[in-house]
Length: 117
Picture (tube, rainbow, N blue to C red):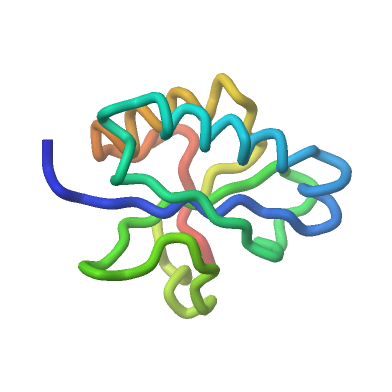
């Protein structure tokens, strides 16, 4: 297993947060990360104000963290543009697969992932 670390940004804007219940998904991610040796210390979750894809929510973006970069802080939008890691319409089951394949296996799920722009 490599030393890659990932940040999962979960939209908590009015649509994803209120209408789509993204806070429950944050709790699910935190629970999975805390109980998994393969994820613990390698994955951090953070809220993001909005991805601008409200009708598709709840949405999240997975991005690799740079050496020494803090994963618990919302990054400036410039760090997100062009990242191939935007997942739309997420559920607990989809999150489980995303954690296993994208964060542990280090391969984005081709049929689900988009480039954030």
